[in-house]
Length: 148
Ligand code: AMP
Image (cartoon, rainbow, N blue to C red; front, side, top):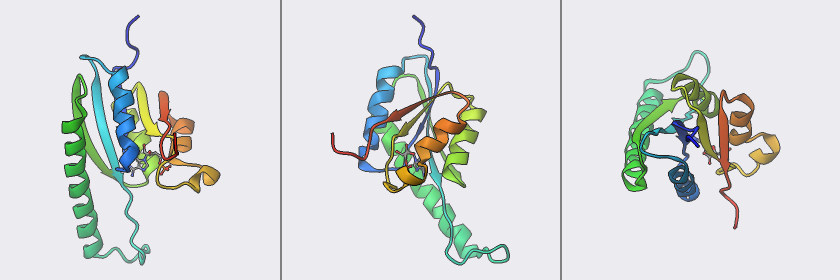
């Protein structure tokens, strides 16, 4: 049977257990896969209002994006994934940016953690839930952030 997943988007938040997302992707990907490793910088300065977007805020956001890019590249180098692998950093609301990049690729699979940083968000609607809800393709929610 042909592998239905050629274009795979992997959304990572740099929590230690994010390696599991890459392990799962390795099991699904092959030499023909096009993989994108994405991190979204969701930066909301405390004092931000419509009138106040300070140059320091933009500078900090840019630094966060540069750091994220380096970390993604390290992850990509260590991951040993087949096919081609690109890294991307986007800025904005996490769920919306993941979905936007998925549409743009276009992805046939999005890989996310079932939940990571925001344990409470299980009650409020996690990133994974939001992505599943809005995704234009299949979503693999890899179990992370819990004891085995
Ligand atoms: P959360 O809903 O924040 O607990 O995160 C669940 C999953 O969504 C994580 O394991 C990641 O796969 C993805 N995710 C969360 N935050 C980000 C982010 N800033 N950039 C990319 N992916 C993220």
